Image (cartoon, rainbow over all chains, first blue to last red; front, side):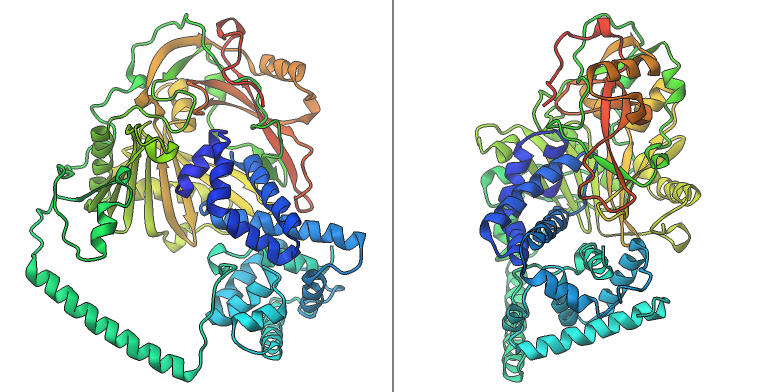
Length: 183
Length: 436
């Protein structure tokens, strides 16, 4: 079923919308959640919450691309879940590691760009990166994939992945500095 | 929230087309693979060229200019998909789509409930009662300030009327999708749209109820899709026409919208759209408005609508809320147009007396756990929803919701609550569908 039809089902308050969403995008969203949570039951719950959240916002929303729309919701829900887990017990997989790495880009004491300005900057910055670098960066910080898995995917060593990510973070820090946000 | 967390959150909100699939495989990039790959590619190109040359030589394409490939999804894999594996030549067994040479308004010559002679409504009608957006859940729309809840729908003049017209969707039976127009009518509407956009229909695909329900015996068509090069025109059973532009229609620099546009910028953009698509939309007095909401992170989601101003407040309200055009924009270009006209598949029931905004507010606060303080905005709208056959006016209240869990700081969630504007004595006792 096409996106427009699934969206129409949501707008019609037809529960078939959830079945179709699950059928079309369940696997994809599970992959997104699983990459972040590394716990199949949690990932499954996150994906179920995704459809519920989508049900909540459609209508009035009519997303252009459901895959991205669902993936974004799943990611946010998974990160929230991970935060809760983290506060309950030490550890928490890749999230703290990724946050540590990103703290190199902008210090905690600095004024932070407004979210919208930052999003535009990130869009510009990432669009300008070579495909391979951009995808490595987003697999790490969008999907929170472990460095080891990135190394396997890109057929390289963990050290090479860390080096590449470090270079990209430095470039991003330079971009932020150009915009007046000193680190 | 720490800066690194804010950055991580912002990364999650980058443009969707930049984000790779989570399971994407990356090829090895060593020299030997590159060389072998290049050789294989060269051989494939050469081989493909020979095959293409042979197929063209054997069977020249003799289709007339107006003919199209006809595919039908009820047959499983479409004929187009099957033939595209081997050759571009198809046997034309169905009547071709004949495009009009001149621009014709999309629904001209088809019965339009809006053209009926006025009469007083006497029959009782069913209406969706107060509904917080489905499933009893709230948090439908998030905004930074209540000003963002007020769109420029021209409703006050209609609310001052004593009566407003009510229509009944013939093609809707409480399930999706509506089936009313015939395949021929949908094809005709789509072909008119193609001509108005100066594109030629290349293929036609018919979608049937059986495709959705897996009940192959139900072959009623509910949508016709015409592929016209980079433009896709879909005509639906309830008169809706969706146009998708592959790659989009570039918006000139002076009409580009920034992330946080002003009302003037939005109006200028909407009027550019009205002019750009004038042949397709055929509006005598185009007007437009935007509806603002924000995503979980606070980024603006603006929806843009065009409609035709009419001679009466009632028709203007109808045009602005259910006979309108929604425009989606992405990356500085117009991507899709959703042209709605449910009255093409409806009948006129009559004019019914309506209640005032205050009366509707009293109903809302009496029936739901809503206080006046929770109500942030109100407007009068015609609300078309395939679960209800009636197309009638409702007061739509934006009511503060308590679902703010996923929202960024400074955002507040509101739910839409609808109260029928038709006087209570004309409404059926039972709601058309219960509040879930």
